[in-house]
Length: 346
Image 1 (cartoon, rainbow, N blue to C red):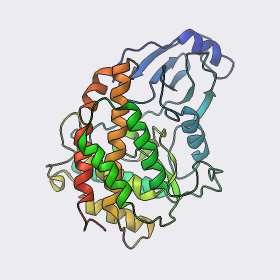
Image 2 (cartoon, rainbow, N blue to C red):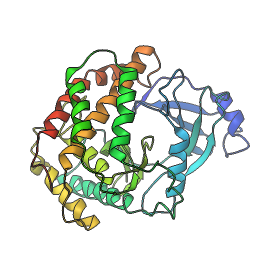
Image 3 (cartoon, rainbow, N blue to C red):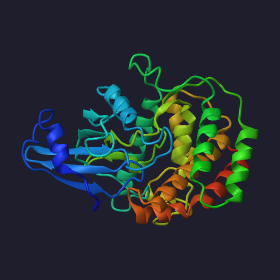
Image 4 (cartoon, helix red, strand yellow):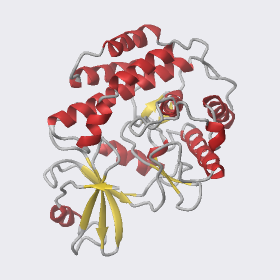
């Protein structure tokens, strides 16, 4: 669950002792081994546990690892239909521990690293995926004006903006030429559908491993890792779920390809999307193949950045980062396959 990484607990305590209970006495910190973006630590104090999420040290890509945005969106969602951890303190003074960070509530529950969820029953798997879908639909239905998040993302074509941004990020972290990625980028630019005007709060990396569920139940207690959240197109989040499921079912990719989902109580891609449509009152989703291709592209760009940080020596989990980096070409190939599914719509 944890991997070693240094955190200056004395500096953390000095900063937080007048802001939160428990930091006037010695604390311990353990780093979670999940997540490749912002290092995340469990803080154990005499009055209970907290979680600290920190921007990585070192030279970073512009606009990446914005912990202040994570803090803002989760604080805004408090009390809504979207379960989030309680936000406690945001520190944007990098002199304290070397980079910006925030401290939030520690949610007691269970997290599934693999969508197969092999350790639980079929009935529980079915219920958990239904809750995952319910929370996603609720997220896309939130009123961004009421939550004062209408400025959380720039106006205009979300897909165009994202493709431009992640192409730039990918090129800035490129370590070798991957022909499939170059082709995918060009096709996404050429085949982009006309903007349909749909705007919603989007998570940006909505997957089973970014959710916390009840320890002995199936209710979702918190959605984690909001680094990529913005105002964008809701179908991109939906495609992110399907993208992961279409990956190989090995330890590194953690997908469901080749798995008999029905035998495990898991829905097919079509069943999940149709249930999402029912929850949102939608008749159909067109151009879904493009959103799926885009999701593979964005994840390829993200893990390329993870690989670059590993090679530069500032990855959150270097060993896993190097393994993930080897999958960039796989994501690019799958993105091209998704775009070729011309009749892929719901």
